[in-house]
Amino acid sequence: MTFLLQHLIPPNCPEIMILSATITHTLRSALWLAFFAAILVAWWMMYVMAVDMDLDLIGRPGIAGEAMRQMNPRMPMYMPMANFGPLFAMWAIMMAAMMLPTMVPSLRTYEDLIGAADGTWAGWIGVLAGYGIMWIAFAALITIVQLGLLYGGVVDMLGIAKSPLVGAGLLIVVGAFQFTRTKDICHGVCHSPMNYFLGRWRTGALGGLRMGLGLGAYCVICCWGFMALGFVGGVMNLAWMGLATLFMVLEKLPQIGHRVVRPLGILMIIGGVVLAMFPLWSGG
Image (cartoon, rainbow, N blue to C red; front, side):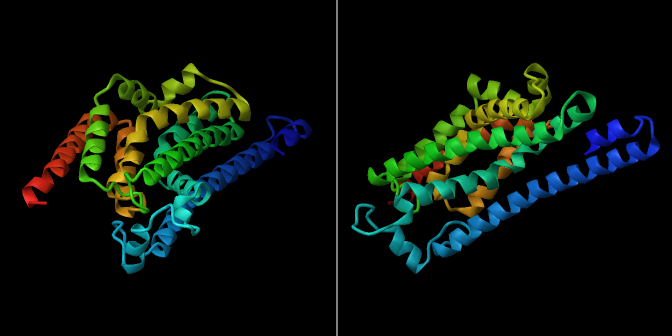
């Protein structure tokens, strides 16, 4: 509409400039409101699923939840948590709840380039779409992993590792990953999206989609461990989901992101050692 008006009315006309600015402001507000609404809806859906599974906010099951937890996935009955479709839907919604908040710095950076370069709001949507596609792909992958662990007897129906040594090992591995070169490279992209955009700049919606796919790939590699740690306390542990989201948001903040990566790694390694030693200390 703005494009049409610009050809019907002289470009320096105050009316067209005001109308164009109004349309842009309205579009910006609508897109950001829809973005944050999607985050709230995703968290609400996770809460509803947790209640339906008889779990509290830290993933502890009630009577019905405990009964489900003890079920054998090979029983001749339909169990959503033992089937790809429902489990994938759960992980996909979880990705939206946890990862969309971490994308705010990248989307704000692209928004700055709408004014400073030749970015567009269609490109903004493309970046968001590409990012989401990569995390949905990861949701499919981790669903397959969970089903393999479930049928292999490593985790129970709630996605909780049956042995504390499995959870301890996972904490140590994810903590150690925080010190790797791979983490440094991928975190550098997530932490400084401006450099990523300037180095791979593409215009339009398809260009935004391409950049979003690349940005999402780096982010998946950077943050996969935080998702995998759901197997320590249960993939439906809303408290852990919130804490992991906070960790990932902190890692992406321009001012402090590079300062928290290794301290978080140290905390996870210590947590893994404590979890591994706990049975000895408790006499279990």
